[in-house]
Figure (cartoon, helix red, strand yellow):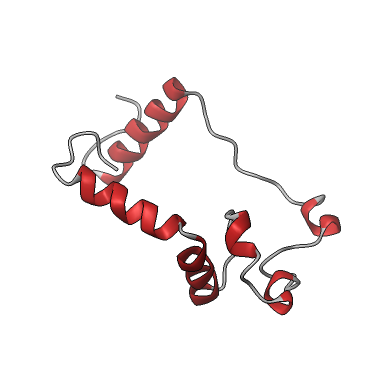
Length: 94
């Protein structure tokens, strides 16, 4: 949510709604994606929870690479460079 949002109360209400176990489980089934909500997992079928595409087994996770959050300064610099690259006539070396 944006810091300056004029609809923060509504945004928090929506986040709360999505975090209710029934809604989180419904969303997980709809998007066919894992949920981090443990209470919602209790409402999902065994078939869903054992789907290796949705919940990869340990032997797959052990071979996986994960994105790590960059430090704030590096993230800011990356965003600046990306913006320059996406702007016509700009150089990333400026």
